[in-house]
Length: 140
Image 1 (cartoon, helix red, strand yellow):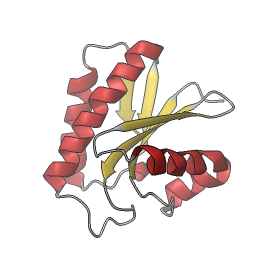
Image 2: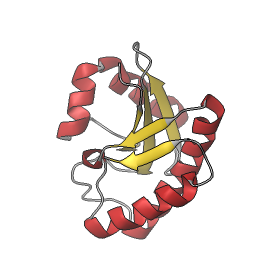
Image 3: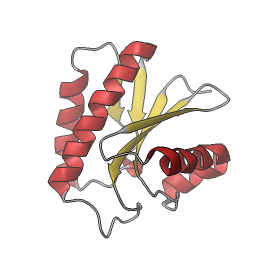
């Protein structure tokens, strides 16, 4: 088991079709199934967070950044709106990290649909949000 936890971008109607999300679904089939059940029952809004823990104890944080499915987000929110949703989701992630005393969270770049410019802005948001915590959070 890895000691770190993973945060990824998802949409409300995520089908886990991007190569990265597809690999997560293949390794942990209940991850995708449980997320679909959650979305069907709760109808999360952009900027919200959903957490799932694998049987091995690794946490997966789903940052809901878009209404539509991923890869390649043809009907996605405007870039500024997606970054604001990201910022809101980071604040939720920070609360969970502090409550659960999580030491590290990785955000795989392949798990996000950001342009190079958006990655620069998202990285700044990430650093600003977690600056005053003991949790190391980074894009990998």
